[in-house]
Length: 123
Image (cartoon, rainbow, N blue to C red; front, side):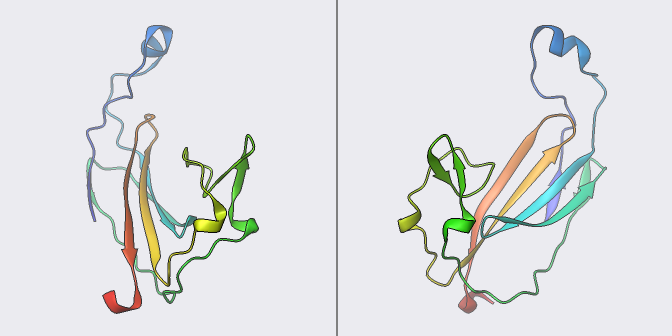
């Protein structure tokens, strides 16, 4: 994966804007999530970076049990970052794994890629 960042600070208003530096910030972490769990964190510190990761674990698919959910305000979510509640009885990937790539900048910005679905036939 090739990552290109703009390095600009996140939008802010008032005193928050005054506290933030106008200096470009290239420090970020590329997070690779597999089936809703963090698989790898890769730091980057350049405006353009080639990031690679190979998952050597077998494709198993995901079926969620109670231990896989996050309970927030009386609703279930697939992870701490999710803002969409889910019905646990409807979550089963039918033998497919899914990946989500999350880029988290120290400047307050973040971006997502995914979901990326893979199954045994896609190898």
